[in-house]
Image 1 (cartoon, rainbow, N blue to C red):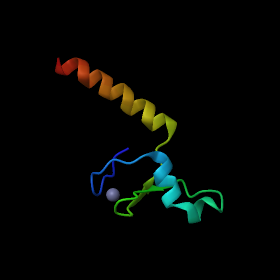
Image 2 (cartoon, protein in one colour):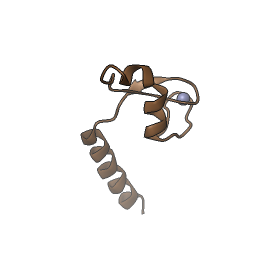
Image 3 (cartoon, rainbow, N blue to C red):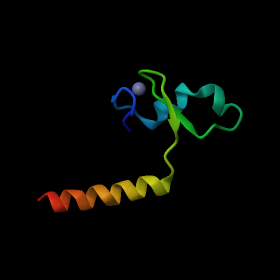
Image 4 (cartoon, protein in one colour):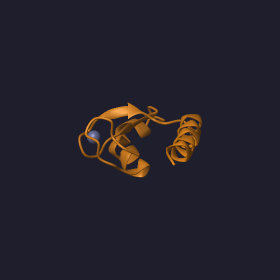
Length: 63
Ligand SMILES: [Zn+2]
């Protein structure tokens, strides 16, 4: 995923590790950018599916 703040890419696992303090108490449903520390809500499976679907449509229409 890409950080909306600094624009760098990072893995979901790294983001969760960065927010380790929260995961001890069951998780805060947020991910934290390991580069700049920016916290953002974790993407749900639904949001991810919609984005994948939209990007696929966008690729086709751009052709
Ligand atoms: Zn960042």
